[in-house]
Length: 430
Image 1 (cartoon, helix red, strand yellow):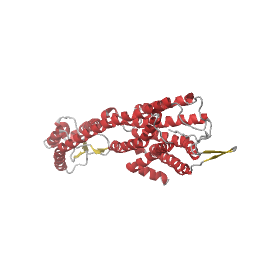
Image 2 (image 1 turned 45 degrees about the horizontal axis):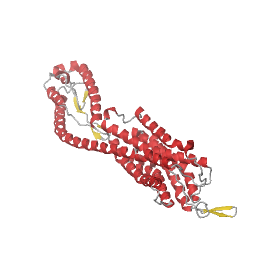
Image 3 (image 1 turned 90 degrees about the vertical axis):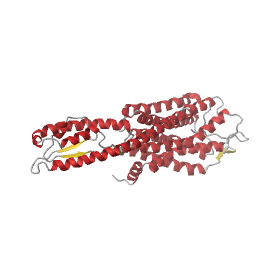
Image 4 (image 1 turned 180 degrees about the horizontal axis):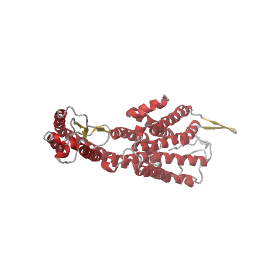
């Protein structure tokens, strides 16, 4: 949040403003230009790349990344609407030369966008918590109504927190028009609580329970993989033996039917499985979804049916091929659908695991950048005897704004997909 404050000099003029007769001269702060202009350009470029990456790259169109777009939009608006006026005021030595109405609009946008940033991070934590705790109800690949409600609520609440300023709260008697700041101390505390001190504990609490759930899932998955290893080896050996046996039943047949047995089949009658073609080949499907293995041949009934194939009467097979193909195809479809449901309930996708690695970094950097700002400003209001220098206030404000430029760098450093798309966009490649 902008808080352009100055300490008055002995002649009651703002610090940095020198009065010579009727002419006013400013103590120009060129460092503000050197830091501010590149910062604005970096924020705009980085966050535009984030938005374009998600909107143009199919693999990045996930539920979590739509929240990241919302966060990037908040940073973009901050760079376009707030930072230019803040840099201009800092360049003039902290003196506000525009109207008080523009100052109030600036304060409103600053409070709203700062609140939107942290509430977007809070909404991401809620969305991730749902994905981990109740995965059956979570759609990973489509933008659902729940995500729309969360993003809309984020912006509505942010506007609600900031709106008192634009509706006249900042218009107090005796206001100094050369200083642009939040004039109401109670509002400073109120906005800090709503924007930071309430959402942050909620967000950290959700991430704590989320990572506890992921640790339990990882340990359970390791144990299940040890159990699956033996079953997978046995099933694949049976499949190879069955393939060799069926290949020699009728070598002269012209017809060839290929059966793809799914990883988990419901119990079927032995006759349905034994109705193989003269040169039938039994394959075992081993797919991977979202970067994690699905597991192969876990069903004992399936292994039993595979044993029963060799006992079937070869003379019955050619006459019953059609029925077998139909029944086997139906079983395959049902098993695939059931396998996907089981997969959803027992695994977190590889893409979500990547997001879970990036998001704590984003949250940690956000807290590191904005915690000093809120602590300093609340202390400045509540502790009358504390003498906080304008320089410290300026430093923590700049630190908060730097956060808007850091997020795209984090995505590039920790996510190969974002990095590749950034490179493609910057090089103008299709």
